[in-house]
Structure formats: structure tokens, C-alpha cells
Image 1 (cartoon, rainbow, N blue to C red):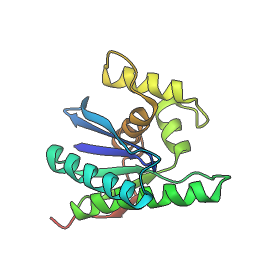
Image 2 (cartoon, rainbow, N blue to C red):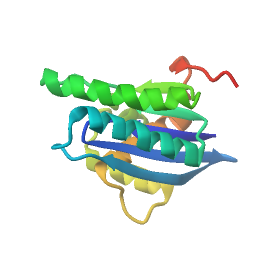
Image 3 (cartoon, rainbow, N blue to C red):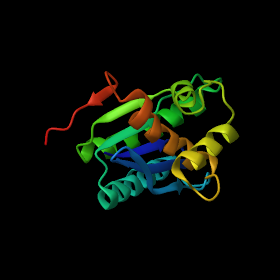
Image 4 (cartoon, one colour):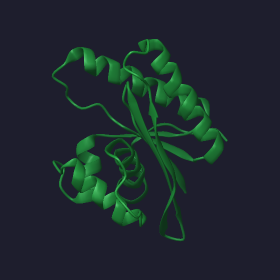
Length: 166
């Protein structure tokens, strides 16, 4: 099974694609969609959508797993994050992918065993599980972690918000 994980953000959105074949976990691709904070917000959203659409078309994942919202103190930041999540999910839905959502706590607990793990711990665990030479940047690591969480630990049971009609 091939999964795309997404760590949405209004200026940096991480994505990571992992695949499990014969119970072996493989890194397929990963990266970031970066937009300048000086760019108009609506154009940042369009960029996130169009770049994720290209990634999905290129790598043909079977499922999208997205990091869910966390409780934020800044309402404006939380709203912007919600918008970024929305366009990421729309890119997945328009590709007819099932969508799964996991909280940061669920992802960290699934990967590191502790829901309050630090970003460095998540990065190192992603590096180890995927056999990468060095840990990925934080946004990419979080996206890969969401995908790994869906594949191995959470299995998506009861978490899918959309099912493919293929």
C-alpha cells in the first residue's frame, strides 16, 4: 500500500510518500511546498493545492493521511492552518483518495511511543524506520510520520473520512 502523508502549513506544507510491500516499509518521495509569507494568502493556498495535485499524480498513492489540527492559542494562525488542511484534503479528494486524519499526539505515540515526543525524536525515528542517511527536516518528517502512523500503527480503522469509489 502506498500512502501520502501531509503536514499542512500556510507557508510550509510537508508531504511524504511511503509504501509497504511484503511487510517492508520504503521511502518513495518526500518534500515541502514552500510559499513566501509575503505572498498573498489565497495564492499560497492555490500553490499548496496545485503542488500536492502534481505529487499525487506523479506517485499515485492509494490513501492520504493528514495531520489533524492541534489546539492553538492564536486563532488567526489556527484558521490559516485550517485553510491549508482544507486545500490539502481537497487535492486528495479530487484524486479520489480515501482521507485519514491523525492528531499530532496520535502520530507521536504511534512512532515514538510517547505522545509528547519532541520533533527531533520524530525526525530520528522516521530516519531509522525508513533507512534514510540523515533525518529529514521537521515538516517532511512530520508528513512521513503521519503516513507511517496510518500504515503500521493505526491502520486507519474507523478514521477514514472518504472512501474511494473505484
